[in-house]
Length: 206
Image (tube, rainbow, N blue to C red):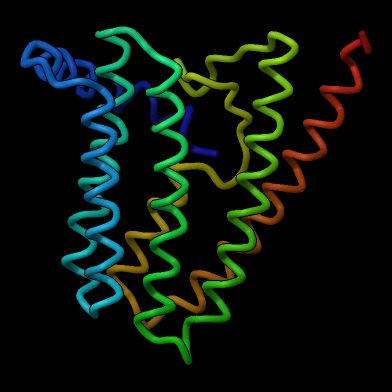
């Protein structure tokens, strides 16, 4: 919901940093993979009972996620880069709730399962529409320059990262935060499905 509003604020510093990185020869894919490593480190630290240390790596993951796209815009976007970016992002989004379930299964497992279900529904509605949008040549730049059609929703990247930060700062509140955000994600997924159905119905069948 807030991603498009944050872009004018975060893009200028990211673009400036990306130009410096690109001059050193660091590729966008290298930044993406580094971010993935940071994200998995965050999950491991959370599962081991160090959520504040995990928070540092959550933030590093998000910094890398912003930088990889900016570097790609300097060096030129590739299909491989877009594929790695979205795929490894979903790995990270799933790893954090799972880590909290491992941290305290008796308190967190059911809430983590509900959150992962909502992520699955949200991701499916997002990616399925992106496939159809590519097929029909639909484009949008509402979320900035992306490798695939970005169908907005109530629960996007900014909201999810805010959630993960809160979870790391208040691990005892994980069940409350997870259930609440799962509800938001389900609403977001249903809205995306309705938007997708309405949009695709307007496209003539070939």
